[in-house]
Image (cartoon, rainbow, N blue to C red; front, side):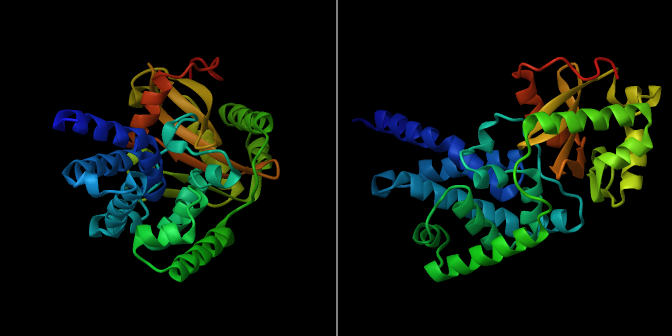
Length: 317
């Protein structure tokens, strides 16, 4: 096989791993854009490597991507971005390859916005061990080799990560899709019609809401009482000429599934201009997350344009 044929073969081997590597990077970084950058950097490492000496390409690539992501998480810039409270995970539409693998509950949960947010409480090593074990089913020997740590250290990191996430997790288990949609539709109907009492009834007593302020604020906006969340939802979902001018027209509101959770998407001319996701526990809404910063909706918009959507919940908002 000549060098050109070798390069094509080696490129095809990398491409066969691309989706898995992107899924790994997304779970480690919580950002699809950063995940894509990490995978592209890994491709450059792959091209520059003596590939004839790489015995197991999948393991080698996993190690490279994981360590590129750890470097990003440890960087001074990343720490500043995440400690000022101006960070939420980038939402992805159901069916996005980055959300895989999704065969088990643990794999699906590891890519939920709730767990991606909770993983911010972990050290970079704890996060890497947790993701490699829970989402990709690596054993501790494989994780130790990937991270250059001992088996016992891998076990200790996993124990601490599980404990921190379990202690902070709200609710548990998966919600019936039909029930989730009904609750979200009721929430939207109550918000747009200004029925505060109904909104409060749909929220848990300790409900929280988080918004990125459309990327216009330095810190996340947080609301911690059902009454306050109801008031913000009623005001936020009330259509006004000013809001239409802000988004550039009259959008539609669609139901969707985002990172495995029920969601409302505000869509204008095939561009997603807002995403509101809901964590549901015990038949009520425990957490509301609003994301409208354009940079965080780019991949979701791309997926939406290729998605066959249902009839909108509100055709003209």
